[in-house]
Amino acid sequence: MDGEVVGAAWSLHDLRKVLIRKGFPGDVDLTDRALISWRKVGSDSWPDKTRKRHATAVFMAAGLAWSAIFLVFIGSEDAFGALTFASQVSGFLLFLAGVAQLLATGAVQDYWGKRTARYSGLMILVGVLIALLVHSMLVALWLQEREFTRWAFNYVSLTLWSLWATWIVVREKAWRGTPHPRQVTAGVLATSLIAGANFAYSAAYQPYATSPQITLSAKFGKPQMDLADQVIHVPVTFSLQNTGKVPVTILGSVFRVHGVSSDPETGEKGLVGVREDVEGYADSELYASSPEKRLITTGLIIDAGDYFYPGTGQAKDVVVQVPKGTDHESLEIYGAVTVLRKDRGEVDDMFGYPWYSWVKGETDIIECPPKDCGDYVLHLGELTHNNNIINVTRKKRYVFAIRNLGEEPDMYAFVAPLNARGKVSAKFVPDEDYGVETVPTGTVAMSLATILNAVG
Image 1 (cartoon, rainbow, N blue to C red):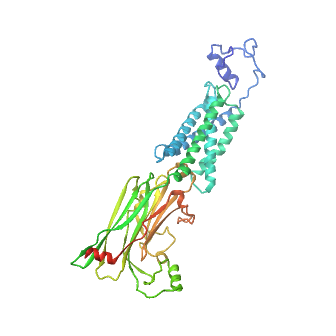
Image 2: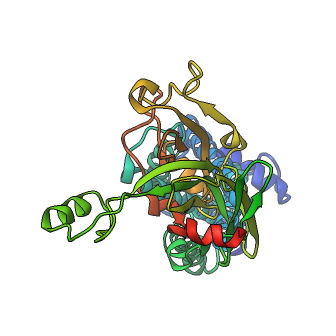
């Protein structure tokens, strides 16, 4: 009216309602060209197809609302719970993107209705572009592994919907009538790129740029003689320190104390003996045969499932008992701790609960019966990635830690999904993906002569 936009009309009925609100009588002559100037078409030509328009509006609103709820859900997990700053930033950006889509959902009724709000079309355009960019990224990440996940249906369907929605808003030029549409669109694209960059930084670069620094050492203490029982008590201390900046989860630990014996020999062994030593991973000695080891003491250094934060330390003291008249020539101690980076993922509390192979049914998830693998203790827990984008684009991962028992106790840990039978999958995840690392003490030895001299 007088050069000013006062509303939009889809039919003659809508036009009369706009004019009535502006003070015109209800029976105004719409063909009076002195009053109304019709451009390109006359009063008898209207583009409205009510059912199609309403169906488009409902489908657009449903897609925006669905996408908004999904983004708010996956974004809030990181925004309020991620351990790394980069993951929190990504989470907040996804959360805000979901809020923007909720606002766009509210603008759908106005844009496909009376179009009284100046920015309704631009809000819908922003919401649709967010959906197209974010869900396309999720599909691309999912395609890297192509694993079945219940979330895949959401972002695959929403990607197809966003392609349709983009075609609709571009065809109708939804940005018309709003100031600076290019700048707003550029802002949406820039925000999406920042979110993508933060995800890449938190999921790929940062974990490799800052590595955990875990140290484990073992040392003998001063032996003491128990005169009543004629037993030598040899103290051993294991010291574990986190001197880095990355918190870790303890997946497992083990220590072993061996008594070492060998028979004296005279003369050179010759080439054959050296070959045998090399094949047995033993040192070659001139006056001693290949050593025989006997396990004296074994156990845990630290419980599985414990958290170990930067700047913290822990010590484990063990007292090894050796009869005074033993034929061992020396004692050897060895220990190892396996950790998982806590900034890559978190293991649930059930991981700390042990399962025993000799208890029927407790370790059936491992396709290795005790008669073949011997006795072992299993720790099992579900892994939640620190970046929720990975959680929704990957199959569930589980952390397994197995401590083998027997004459040479050892432990190992790995991350893997479950196969179709609910057993451990053969598709192990590389240790470096989660920062799974085993830290050993190395072998520390003390001769029995030194021990006897210490106790007098």
